Image 1 (cartoon, rainbow over the protein chains, first blue to last red):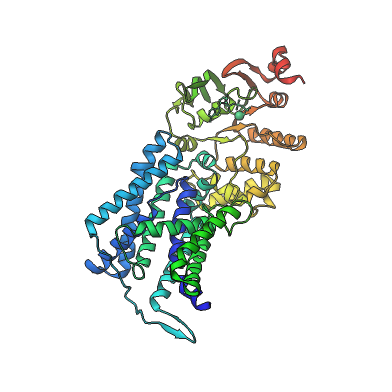
Image 2 (cartoon, protein in one colour):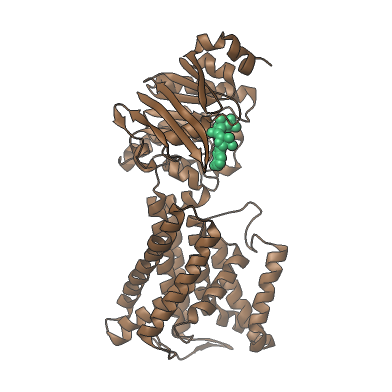
Length: 290
Length: 235
Ligand SMILES: Nc1ncnc2c1ncn2[C@@H]1O[C@H](COP(=O)(O)OP(=O)(O)OP(=O)(O)O)[C@@H](O)[C@H]1O
Ligand SMILES: [Mg+2]
């Protein structure tokens, strides 16, 4: 059992980041952005283009990928969200428009990187380290550590920095935030840029364990979204917990039952949560946002 | 001085303000009274640039601010304490006060100093500065909303029904505070349904009905006006 829990941590950390990106953008801008999964894909491709093709190094790959994908996210805010907000479009229209953006991004990725699936290993050993009956690879440890580090930095940004507090204010009460003099155009931009950058990191982290393809965003995006809903959509800590939870459930289900039932179990869980605890598993009664 | 000159405003195709004009004198309390749906909140949201005026102009100390965006209007020193308070529920009292100072460029030390003096001004907040604002009582939340507005160091404060939903003793406390704030040299536009109380404190008042200014006069004049008495003061 402990073995499967341990094995679920790396993918759990990745789900947690994707869930966090969905929830944060949703809380801070009110938009469910369906292109979040494609930010993960772009992050993976850009990161490893920088790392393996341009040979600029592993650490720079993170930063360049985050920056490039953040610019894509800001582009979506600028060219999709902003015009639709100006014309007072209902939220559902914005969400559908992000779905359109998602398809366009996938097709561009297909044109740039081609149809073949790729695996990008990390520059660390993939040989398991054993501790009794348990074993974990240095690569997995690195994935979990980088994921957790980013979550801590992000949480710190939200709680301590002026801009982070402003984003929380917008998430809690957009009208009141405007009255404080917060520019919601700017906060939308930050929400889209930051969420995209978080997605990019998830992409680099998933690349060594999951095939990178132009349409991988659909799968990882959906898993991240499910994690967010299970943990509490709109809540950053809830979504992080949701991501680890789904990652571990999948690993345990795959190991103890059968990997063929893994997705069925995940989605059954989603339906149960929507039915029995629609605010998410980990939230207190009072709806707690970022 | 803040001058509203013949502004109109609409929601969709429905015009709800029809060429409303108000003069809000410096360092005075001006009140705007009227019944439900008369257009009081809309007037305040127009001043803040949240609802766009379709006609007329809003002039602050000779500067036309009608077309400015809300963040710029806040920077010029106008603050709205909204109807229903709208404190940030999952932030502490302290963080709410910090948000009030969002548009200020002053140093951390200066802001800290101002937070301390706000906490001295509102003893009720002082003991609770770490509490999540959403868990406080209505009266406490109203004090916080006022304190948060003061943190922005505004010259003009617009208050939308600060007495709404509060026990009479708390209402009295709120009005005492409004009085003190005027004493600090602030200019106040007070929107109220509690007309008697508002007119008692106000230097000048306007009555709005269905989006039109129906009457105006000093607080005393309006209090003794038979029409006002019949419509807003009588029981
Ligand atoms: N967001 C909105 N969308 C559409 N109509 C609105 C909106 N806000 C207000 N109205 C309408 O505009 C008119 C004026 O409303 P407003 O809120 O300004 O009145 P008020 O004087 O503040 O009333 P109250 O004392 O109840 O707060 C009303 O007819 C109201 O129904
Ligand atoms: Mg109102």
